[in-house]
Image 1 (cartoon, rainbow, N blue to C red):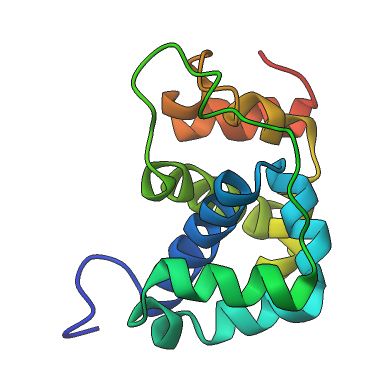
Image 2 (cartoon, rainbow, N blue to C red):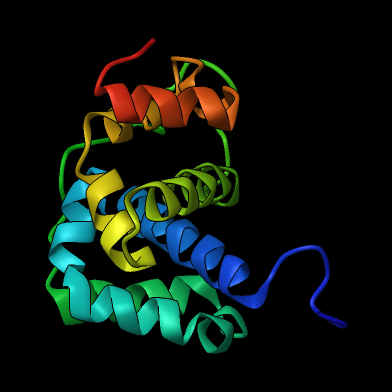
Length: 153
């Protein structure tokens, strides 16, 4: 584990993948679920596998490439513009999703990318993406238990 810091390399790759999803969603004004579904499992696998390479590049350029490749159109979901308080960064939100996805993958005994697709397509994604609510900075265990119960606890 020497040289990896506090988190494993795959944790960092998942963090980058989630942050990129958020970045693309903000840039194209789409929900996170729409971005994940447009990217599809194959591209998500590629992003997750090559995250350390993409991370060395400018996120704006990387996102532009994937927006074009996946044909992601401009939407009308603007959770950043609608936010009345301080806006969490795409890195902040990436961290929230990373933790939840890891818990779901372990709990349901499924792969990381499969867990990612499930989480972004669940009700909890809309709650996390409502920056006027407090869900995105709640305790990770609370977010996970709410996900499992399919409702906010």
